[in-house]
Image 1 (cartoon, rainbow, N blue to C red):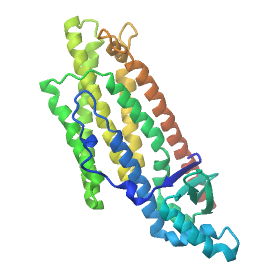
Image 2 (image 1 turned 180 degrees about the horizontal axis):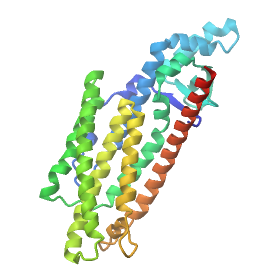
Image 3 (image 1 turned 45 degrees about the vertical axis):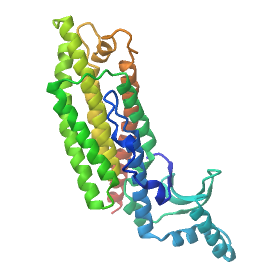
Image 4 (image 1 turned 180 degrees about the vertical axis):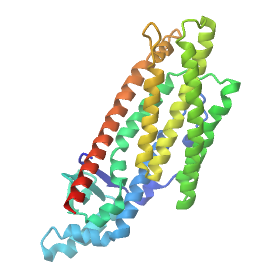
Amino acid sequence: MEDFEIDLPKETSLLVNVTDKNLYNYDFSSYSLLPLQKIASKSITAKIKDSLFSNISQISLIEKLSNQKETEYVARISNFAKDKINSGEWSFGIRKETGETYAVIKDNLSGKNKSFVTLDKRIIKDLGVLPELSAIQGQLASISEQIEGLNQIIQRVEKGQYNDRYAGFFSARQLVVEGLASENESNKRELLISAIKIANETISKLMISIHEDSALLIDSKTKSKDARRIDNLLQTSLGYLNSTVQLNLIAYTALGEKQALFATMTNYHSFIEQVLMNKNENGKTVAWLLDNAHMGDDGRIQELTNAMSANIEVLLATYNKERVDVIENEKIENKDL
């Protein structure tokens, strides 16, 4: 993966406030999941911090970082650094540059690194994919914001026969909230996996509904009255699909499951390409038809879908490049053996 640097926050900033009403939004026009996205992102940095300091104590790491200076100043600098870290003025971080992974101490005010030391291979191995997963959180947040932007212009009209599918979103969301808040790692994992299972079942049902309704919408034989009804169902289903996919991205982030996260994203991207961007005999996509189904709409579903699709493609390209690099490195190592 390309060079990156991530900050490791103090423990207090990682607490989940389960009484925060923003986590339980029942505004049926839009469901913002950005608060959960932020919590999941923080949980990754917490895992990195726990893994790092299970291999080396904070004091030992500070001493190693301080050893970059003259020997007689090490003790004084170590105590100074500890005070700065405890006060929150400085913080630990992880940096990857030109293939090397470093621990750093960063001045939070200036944003500059005060010192750094190369981590040994054992620590890097234990960290696994967590640093890379943390490094892409900004891109994931951007994609999530685009999904929410798309949801805000989608008209949701609840229909009885579809409500069981929509209810799956709320069930999965509650399990994600409880999983993120759980202090027991085993319970946390069980709750998040349960959320993923419900979300995947909901996603598959919604995808089938959207596929079937899309086929009717682009069919020239469909009457105008039926087309309006189908459009309403499509927009509602699409909104719930977007939100439920977000839940899986949040859950896999919290679990530190990079491969599964990219599988979720690739599945969603493929569906958008093959269904929403599917064209009728006049060359109009389903997204275009949704844009033009109502008077006074912003008409930006196709625009936002294209932009979101492009961002996902960039992230997937980075992931595939990284996989190729790993495979090539393994071939070289095996050859050397």
